[in-house]
Amino acid sequence: MAFRRDEQGHSPQAEPWRGWYNLKRWKDLRLRVFERDLFTCQCGCARIECDTSDLVCDHIEPHRGDPALFWSEANLQTLTKACHDGWKQRLERQRRLAP
Image (cartoon, rainbow, N blue to C red; front, top):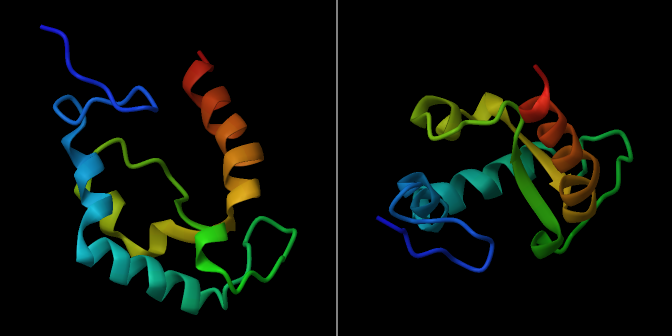
C-alpha cells in the first residue's frame, strides 16, 4: 500500500509523530527552548536571532518517533535555520549512512 506524501516526501501515515510539531505543547516547548538559549544559535556561530521564524528547535539526538526523546527539553537546542539545514542535516545523513 502506497502512502500519500507531503512536499518533503514524508508520509503522515508512516510517520504519525510528524503531527506532534503542530501541537500547542510543541509550540510552547519550542519557545521555552529559544528563551532558555537566549535566541542564540548553539552550534558555535553564536548568532542571535530575534525572528523566531529563522530559528529551529533542534533535537540534539534524533528522536526517530520516540516520544521521550521528542519531548525532552534536555534533548533540544536552538539553531538558526541555516545551521540546522546545513551542517546539522549533513551530520545526521552521515550518521544514518555509517556502518
